[in-house]
Image 1 (cartoon, rainbow, N blue to C red):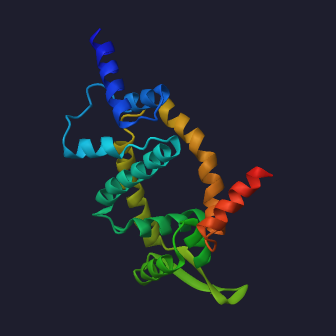
Image 2 (image 1 turned 180 degrees about the vertical axis):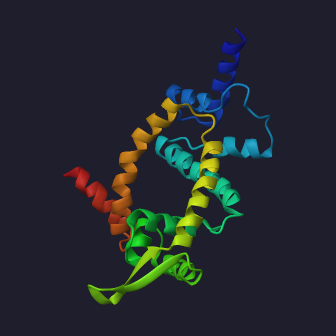
Image 3 (image 1 turned 45 degrees about the vertical axis):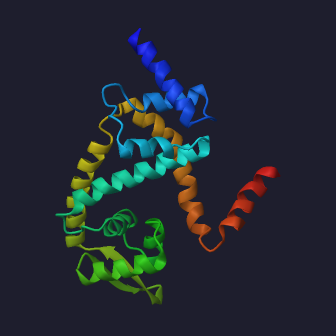
Length: 217
């Protein structure tokens, strides 16, 4: 009976903060805070309650973006004592690890970074000996980059640390939970990992019109 009373109380609290939220939204919200792990209200807790969006799209994107930001905090901690303490450097080396020998633009796009930022980071990685470059035999104006032996060794150290950060972040999820979320999100990331890069030169209004113009046809 106590559990029923608790659910009713939390449902009442949820309705006050989310007047547009339905019962299914409340259930997801309730299950996202397992019993025994709910913290006492404080300034930060109160802020999070107020920051909960009422509409589904905003809730979905807030959940994704803040989850990513939280994971990056763990990653920065994990990488502190590695040869590649900057997440951006790990992303670029990881891109090279998967692409093998490639041009700078392809590496930067694969890592989904801005060209200017990626170029500066790659140049520093070359100076430190983690990345090697040579003239492209098919285009003398271009250079090809490849991860050096020391770069590969450093990256594998980072992978081991990243696994620890990943284990910490996913500790409360079951294998089925992870499979479910991955199955939902993987098609989304596969689609937009390509399209976001192709659309970088357009305004957000142009992209919006392109997407929703297509859906109206």
